[in-house]
Length: 204
Image 1 (spheres, rainbow, N blue to C red):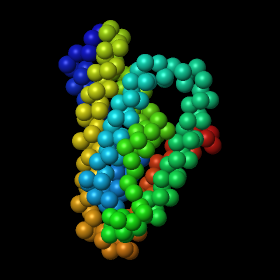
Image 2: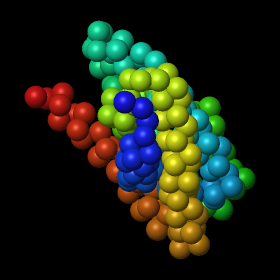
Image 3: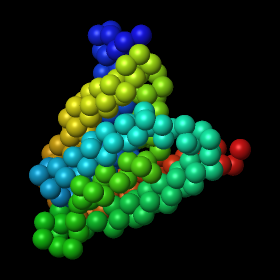
C-alpha cells in the first residue's frame, strides 16, 4: 500500500489534532507567549517542530524497535522526561512580571532546548509512534517516513504557534503582578498534571 491521498488527508487530520491539543509543549508556549512575547518565543516554536521532525524520522527508522527490545530504556527515558517537566514547571511558576522578562535574567527556552525536550516528552513519543505505526505504508517505507515527518512538521509549526500567539494576546491582561503569578502557577500546575498518566501507571 502506498501513501495515498486519502491516507495522507487522514494523517493530516491526526497531525493537526495532536499538535493543537493541550500538552507540555503547548502549555509552555502559552506561558512563554505571556512572559516573553511572540517574537522571543519563535526559537522555542521552531525547536519543537524541528526536534519532533527528527524524532519521527528516528522512530520510523528503527528507534521504536529498540525500545520494544529494551523496554527499560524507554522507562528510564520517561522518568527523565518527567523530572525535566517538573523542573520546567518550577521555572514557569517562578517567572517574573512581564516587564521584568524583557530585560531581566529570565529567558525563553532556546531552540536547542526545545528540540532536545522532544526526546523526553511523553506526548511527542506517543504522537511519533502513532504516526509511524498507523499511517506509514510498508511499500516505499523509507520515503513515506520522510513524507510523514515533513507533513507533521508543516502542520505542527502553525498549530503550536497558535498557543504562543494566545499567550502574547494575554500579556496586557497579565501585566498585573498578582494575575501573572496566578497564571504562571496555573501553567506550572497543568504541566505537573500532565504527568498523571505516567504516575498512575507506575502505581499499578
